[in-house]
Length: 70
Image 1 (spheres, helix red, strand yellow):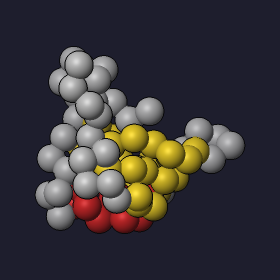
Image 2 (tube, helix red, strand yellow; image 1 turned 180 degrees about the vertical axis):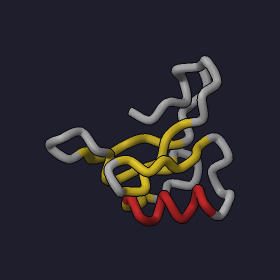
Image 3 (cartoon, helix red, strand yellow; image 1 turned 135 degrees about the horizontal axis):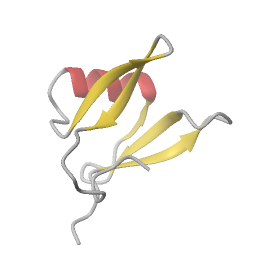
Image 4 (cartoon, one colour; image 1 turned 135 degrees about the vertical axis):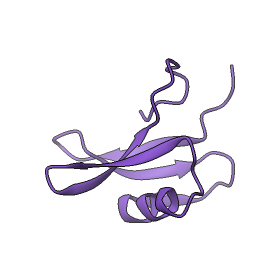
């Protein structure tokens, strides 16, 4: 099984993903940094949704659970 590109390393009490780790580059990111990376095209397997007024990274739907954020 392929290694996930992004792992969630911290969630809020409500379950919102707050911190992320790029398993390929070894970079740790905040929510804001990950959103910027997605918007700049660095993470093509993900997109941004506006959830309750907050830009939120989500995996692109593709039928695979291997690349989901968790």
